[in-house]
Length: 334
Ligand SMILES: Cc1cc2nc3c(=O)[nH]c(=O)nc-3n(C[C@H](O)[C@H](O)[C@H](O)COP(=O)(O)OP(=O)(O)OC[C@H]3O[C@@H](n4cnc5c(N)ncnc54)[C@H](O)[C@@H]3O)c2cc1C
Image 1 (cartoon, protein in one colour):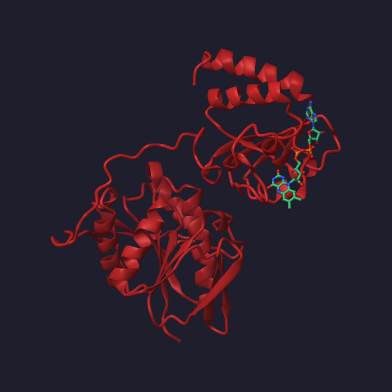
Image 2 (cartoon, protein in one colour; image 1 turned 90 degrees about the vertical axis):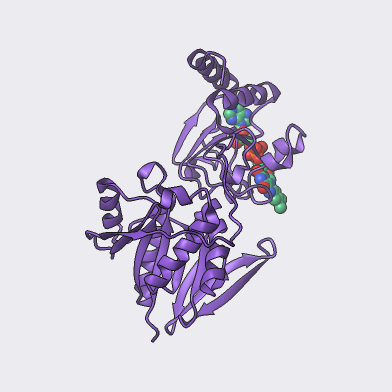
């Protein structure tokens, strides 16, 4: 069998491993286990001791950091070409990236530089008779496309964030990773280098709900007055606003705010369901939220067994009080 080595590219925002980073480590441990590969992680900055310990807790055998890698983050092509050289030096043949801004920018650069196959948004990976089978959805989710990889040609894959779970697998053994530095080189002069000139944090009021971190959603249990109060509350607390189908049908907001099976599939850290019964069509779009809290005046509403926490309350009484509190804390301003 061709020897296999997986490298995953891990961003360390604020010098820490975030959920995406930990999810990648978990993903690679599992992948390396069933395709019998060695693996390691590459970072753009030198990891601090606490981060090295987190790498170790997730069983990462080796961490390579790029000397001068942070300055390359603003020139993705230079970063990609340097990473490609590092991957060649490491004789890695499977590169795993998150399907986020960084991953989708780097993946084609790496695939071209390494003459590798590229398969994006892989939601499923399994092993059949020593061959890795990868699947992704295509045509807007209507079909599933599968490919196999025997390890003969290098492969670059991106994994959607919703498929990355930071769960520590029971068979993972904590270790002390070897940490080493890789010296970056200059980008060849004839390569046109695009430079990132600024990064603007997303505005929760306008961000695509699929990328929102915290969402408060209004259901049919919100009348027009409560709906308006909730919008103000979301602005004060700087969180994103969603709705259910019946609220969208009232014409109070655009389709891009609708959450559920035919609306947006969301994966926020926190989802607050206000006056939402919990139909399967709505639950289908929120089930991967990290934490779901529901408020409903019906203790038997189906949303409650599908929530991490629930409160029985009348929104007509509760929301004005929440809004008063938010106004006094935030001084009526965002
Ligand atoms: C093919 C198909 C696709 C669909 N796709 C979607 C989709 O993508 N997204 C979606 O959301 N729906 C979708 N639907 C509709 C879905 O089936 C439900 O009808 C809808 O989700 C219900 O929305 P709701 O919970 O806001 O309203 P309701 O089911 O009417 O629930 C309102 C809730 O508010 C509570 N309530 C009432 N007054 C108060 C109060 N004063 N205080 C507190 N609580 C109160 C009630 O107890 C109730 O539980 C779809 C339906 C179909 C057939």
